[in-house]
Amino acid sequence: MAGQFAKPRSEDMETINGVSLPSYRGDNINSSEFTPEARRPDPERLLKAYDQSCSTLNLLRAFSNGGYASLQRVTKWNLDFMEDKERGAEYRALADKIDAALAFMAACGIDEDSPSMQSTDFFTAHEALHLGYEERLTRLDSTTEEYYGCSAHFLWCGERTRQPDGAHMEYFRGISNPIGIKISDKSDGESVVSLVKQLNPENVPGRITLISRMGAEKLREHLPRLIRAIEDAGLNVLWVTDPMHGNTVKTDSGFKTRPFERVRDEIMAFFEVHEQMGTHPGGVHLEMTGQDVTECTGGTAEVTIGDLELRYLTHCDPRLNASQALELAFLMSSKLAGIRERGNFGNIPAR
Image 1 (cartoon, rainbow, N blue to C red):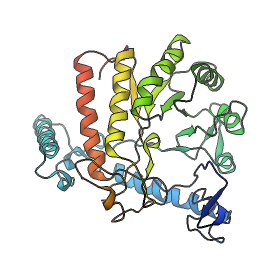
Image 2 (tube, helix red, strand yellow):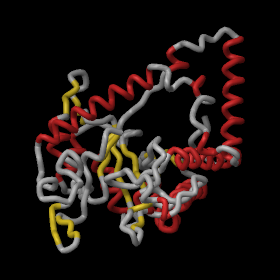
Image 3 (spheres, rainbow, N blue to C red):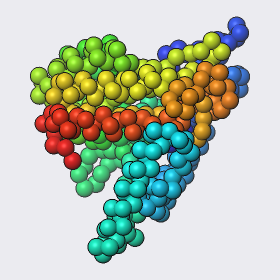
């Protein structure tokens, strides 16, 4: 929410037009501009990242507790992205139902200005990549005598940093936060089971989330064997899909983008695999912005490769715009409704 402060890179150096400079590693290390000065690590950036994160959290608190999350606002949200389109009509129909339900509750004497109707809880998450930063924000809870990483509620480790004997895993073993682990089609069941046991020896529910990032075709091929390995081992994990990172492509003009259709297909494959396996699809990780950017192609927004240069504002990974994100939300809602109607939510009761 506050910025891309720690960015994993496969290569230490980046070369453009024959010039090689250190890779951009996130705004708390260096800058994305391709100059020697910008790519030089600057420890003052750690303080700036912390200050900006605090400011962003304060803004989120103000929104979440100041009425922005109120259901009364649902018909006031910007619907221009789907004017005269099927999904827009569905959204308006849903908003009208919510308005009718709220009117009924008000008639029954339920106070629509109560905190439960006006506010919502929110939680933050990020990849705990910069260990020096994470360690300085680790605190001992005096009531439980357990350590928590206080840079976010939920911390995760990526494909590059989840080596069982690595420093990141040592840090994760020492904190009591809920933890996410990114897994790919290259992951094997035995090593994933071993890592889960290592990080959660008591098999505490809610401690471990496995986040798959594979692409739709590879997910259908490889996720079932990983689910089977976890189920056979009797481990408690939450399954989440990340349909963004396995679907990044680079255009001839040099833009990184993510086709909306590939993102959609991986999400649908995730739901379908879990329905077939009798397990529970626990969540979706999306990268999005409320701005009207042109960074991901496709969707009802009809962003083309030629449109990318119009409003490509990210310095890191391409994000879904508001239209594409809401379209995905409706597609997911429809898919989940079908699974619920068939009663195929595994052993998790529908709520």
